[in-house]
Length: 216
Image (cartoon, rainbow, N blue to C red; front, side):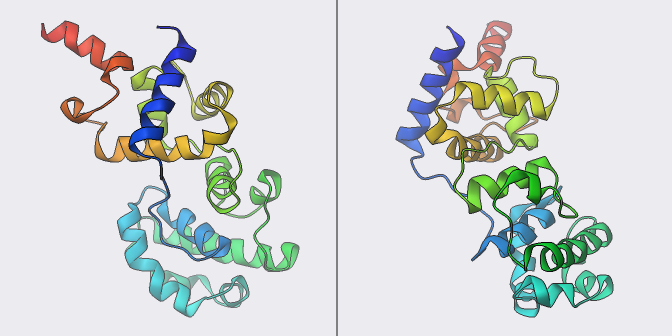
């Protein structure tokens, strides 16, 4: 199978079976999404969603958070992984937003990455989810699943994976495809024991074909 045929089959399957694919983080505006994404690093969306209601009630705007302190922010996020670093990043992010961007989350990759705690992946999430732009954030699920299927065969790092996916996917589904890969990796294509018997794309999956040969 040619690589573009594999991508076409991937898109066709998920367009039919998962036409609506969205972030599982709870948020009401770009500021809330940015806070949630920073908190979600190496932490489950479920835990983040349990934590953010009280946090957003106390800090409804970037200005409110910027006027706070690391210690106070920590008290609201202490159940999250790496709360000390994330409290520092949240305060720095809020202060930078207020100082340099009038408290408004920027809508471009370059300015987003100027914010403390915001790397390329987080910036791409903001572009795709908050601003509906054709961006491909690559997290552990996207990196693992795209390589396992064979969409980004032998890709060595997340940036290479991002570039390959963006080059082969139709522009109008790039941001949705990011959610397809995440949700597929979260619920079907599990890291340790993928649920191949529940998977609808085994016909294009390199891992499945390899396992099938081994198990015959």
